[in-house]
Image 1 (cartoon, helix red, strand yellow):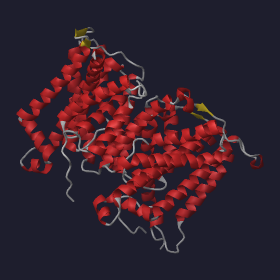
Image 2 (image 1 turned 90 degrees about the horizontal axis):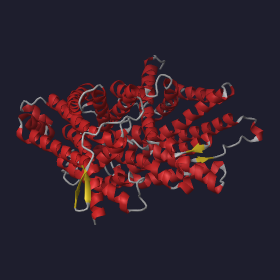
Image 3 (image 1 turned 90 degrees about the vertical axis):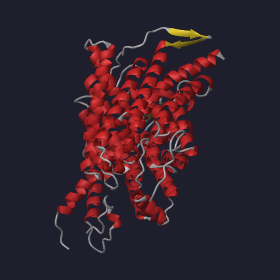
Image 4 (image 1 turned 180 degrees about the horizontal axis):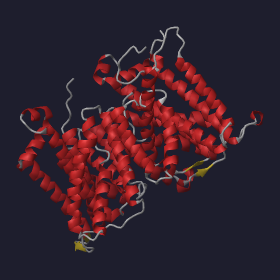
Length: 333
Length: 293
């Protein structure tokens, strides 16, 4: 089945499936059906939790483009998440824009900022990118507090959530869930098609061997900067949806901890695969809420140990482990 | 003028602390090519050990010696257990592992000692030295003195001892060092131990000024990164000079640029990092890396 023994599993789309029935698409369809069915069966709080999983998954899809596929590290993705969230909040608060319009605008602002910051950072080795992004994430919080008249300062901004249209017959939590699901599916398809294109191949090439990629004609700084800007765009879109769902933004929701948790979730979920971000989203949402009962510090201890353990034994994370198990199942040729 | 000099002196005091953590970062980078994102958290953990010793009734200086010894051993252990398995792995893997260590140590400190702020004793007397209209706190002088002492000891170690010679050899070329009989693995562990010790010093110096809590070093770390970037990641002297420059730049920017004020000072290291990377990526004292395909 696999055409290559590369270190990181290629997404299914890269492989030549021929005319055979692909179980992956069936699995995906079943998952989507379950995702559509779920909000009618769960209590509102659980629907909210699932919504947040999807929000994080969108951000992680972007982070995965950068870290998993281009091999560049960002410790400041929470900053772009915050920028998306605040762009949306300010547009709603100041300009009374309709909700659907805030999404492309928030994504665009994050993209442009990612491009602007990526140009200087990406000309250098990955290590320095980690430094610069960490500094950005730390700097953003006081910056948000400073421009009080626009951002509401430390108090933040409170906004009305989108109300479900009458024809849908949905409750608010269900409507928010479906909005988020739609964004997540669109983000998933966008990421999948990006990776299948010439760009995705360029990213994999520069991740696996920069010098070889350059020799083959991949413009390193161009593609690195682009990957950074895209991943910022996904984070911005996720931030915008976050504002829809929560209806409140404040600087302290977007500390450097958020950035580090996102990276942790992605690493545990699985770098370089399409299902990794979804698993990572589950982690980011549920590990803290479940383990916080033991001790305030328990989520950190679990995440820290898991990250180190994953890097030792399963660099492709949970998604990679699942993939390996599936391959063990014998299949008819 | 006196007010300006006063600000410079305070900047130097802050800078000395950044310098000490930057020194720890540089020590590890020199030997292993790893930037240890957990350095600040290890320093914080060491400071808690010192606090625990003082709380148990030990005199401060004895507690410091115990802390430094524990930190040294802890640094070596971390190298052995956590870093060794990913040695030679891609940069991305190593950075992620040190980030994991960062999260773990931070949370572990919170678990053991809770997230409540703790008062940390100041080892230096309270008064200030008055000269030419400027007053210099004894604690600022003490911090500067300690950092100078650490720097001097490291210089002696590297230049005049056999261990130091071996460490320099490993930093210059691990493969050749191994061929002439230097125990490279042991030397790398030694480097981590030294770095943890130097980091512990910076933690103990910071704690009386900032109060002790698990997130204490988060803010300092970014200044230390700026200092190391400015000085050059492979130059201990650069780290110290960089730390002092960053400290002074931050204090002056906070005092004299109205827009920045005290809350946006944390943007100064970001600007310094970006500026250095664009203009002189190897830093003031660093050597430009030459890559061979």
